[in-house]
Amino acid sequence: MAASNYDLVVVGGGPGGYVAAIRASQLGFKTAVVEREHMGGICLNWGCIPTKALLRISEINHLLHDLDKYGFSAKEVSFDVSKIVKYSRDTAKQLTSGVQHLMKKNKVDVIDGHGKLAGKGTIAVEKDGKHVQDVAAQHVILATGARARTLPNVEPDGEVVGEVVWTYKEAMVPKAMPKSLLVIGSGAIGMEFASFYSDMGVDVTVVEVMDRILPVEDTEISDFARKSFQNKGITIHTGAKVTGVETGKSGARATVETGDGTTQTLDVENVVLAVGIVGNSENIGLENTNVQVDQNHIVVDEWQRTGEPGVYAIGDVVGPPWLAHKASHEGVACVEKIAGLNDAHPVDTENIPACTYCRPQVASVGLTEADATARGHSVKVGRFPYQANGKAQALGEAEGMVKTVFDDTTGALLGAHMIGAEVTELIQGYGIARTLETTETELMHTVFPHPTLSEMMHESVLDAFGRPIHV
Image (cartoon, rainbow, N blue to C red; front, side):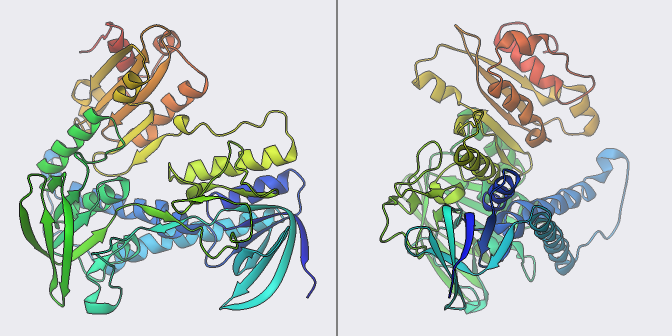
């Protein structure tokens, strides 16, 4: 069977892969994407988008039970789990269909199957375990993504014993709302599920092996988040680990070893595993190549090049931060470098905003205060509380803060860290500032509209240099 010939082939149709393919086509490459399951990848189908739909629903449920605050009342508020799941799945389906349209619009061929390297410039495509075709390309971009990490003593049980131990997939399509839930891991995924289920009335416990929740965030933000979640009724154990889970038809009994060395048991209906992800670097034909793999992640240089000429890798399969927007920008940078564009720029991971869509939301970009100090910076730190902002008060969302970290000598914005309503929308202002290498002077001279939440961003900058107005 003769191989179909392309200039560039992407293996994987997630937010890194399909964006890379679109940009390649724009630049004149004959392009194809090999995708084994669904265009849009985990992000559109089982991650970013459907989880945000669920979190919107839980926010509505929270508001419906807090109506008296705004002068309203409602009786017999209830929800239908099947309709909640349908709304989330329909949202994902709509966007996946949109990606299919983008492929046609940009003249990108979509090849249905599992792609793997099969010699220089060749990708073998399999479907249902059978070889269906070969695809030839001068350039191959691996965008195979990642999967949920499991623990050796806590395995997801799927259909076994009534689906007690969940990964993110099962947690997004519950057949019924559990009365109690254990979330193992307190990163973005763990805290989003903890927030969703808590706001839906579930008794939630979180166990985190590190000494604080949201451990990659600034310590001050992590501490603020912990107090907020505990005030919502979520039980949190940090410096602790789950050493075993016994499942039965009525739920699970988890053994938790706490930070002080004591052990306790916890009975819950369901368990969510949110302990990170593992790159999908297996079974893609790397064995007879010079592609290096380190802890399941493909090793690349700043332009996403692997050790094998003509083979590149982007997104979750190359390592943290495991974010859809990072994967997309890596794809664009990779393709533009291949095309020889003079203005191609590698991705600076320190300028990538991180967002967690729990309630309250958490967002950040750049260095934490501790990281900045560890790198030898003399820092100036500014803070501004939500409770001092007029728009936050009017919204009834006065919980939160904005924190900025500057270099004392140069005035460079080293990092920004936020917690509160809509910070996932606000953070991009600081993202632009970082990209433009803005100093405190430009930020101070920027006019922020009133009344908006964004005014807190201005005030935090002013506070870092001893000039706050409204606090």
